[in-house]
Length: 87
Image (cartoon, helix red, strand yellow):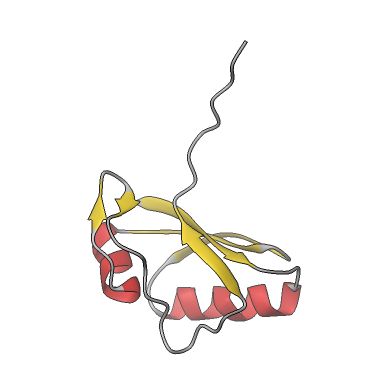
């Protein structure tokens, strides 16, 4: 399973909830919804099918294509990584 975030361009809780319902409907597991976006998880195959992008090393190998249902209010869909700290 891969964890991902669908990030909105601006804060909008209702829009985030709309996209959360869509992601759940196409088979993803919702982790958290906030006014800035939706955290969700799914299999690499689910990501490839939904966003028409190949997954390689836990990253999109090409730019994900947003389904017709998703409009330009989406800033990005990405796989968050753990932060790197420098001391």
